Length: 143
Image 1 (spheres, one colour):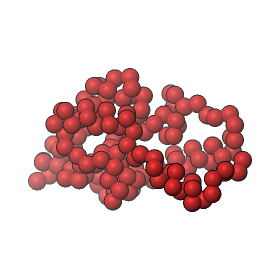
Image 2 (image 1 turned 90 degrees about the vertical axis):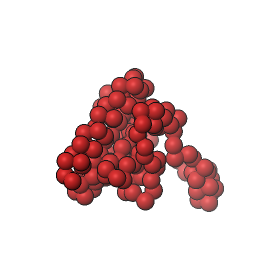
Image 3 (image 1 turned 60 degrees about the horizontal axis):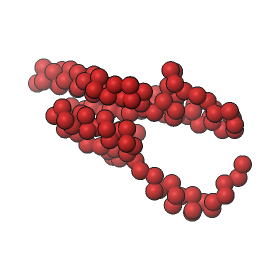
Image 4 (image 1 turned 180 degrees about the vertical axis):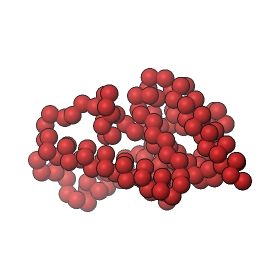
């Protein structure tokens, strides 16, 4: 199906889409309340991580169940299957590339599924804090 907007109109429309979702905001707030300090959607870092802590070389991605093909909740669209298959395949490849990139430069990557936050945001935040604290310990023991 052809796009009903011109390339310029589509670009303008897409530029209005917010980089931060309500779910990401809720999760970031839960981490902030626990005393974690970080930057959000850092465009200078590869993959624009949702949360980044440069001091400890930590990036955290909040992956939506739809766009990142959650093994538990993903439902494949029934129309335009070829397009969607290609789109999801590329998203998964990009996730792998980004995680590999950060691992190769000795950064620590945490991926949190949307459903983990929706089911129990406190548990997801606690597990993320455990991850961050473990990395901090490793960092301090190297000094």
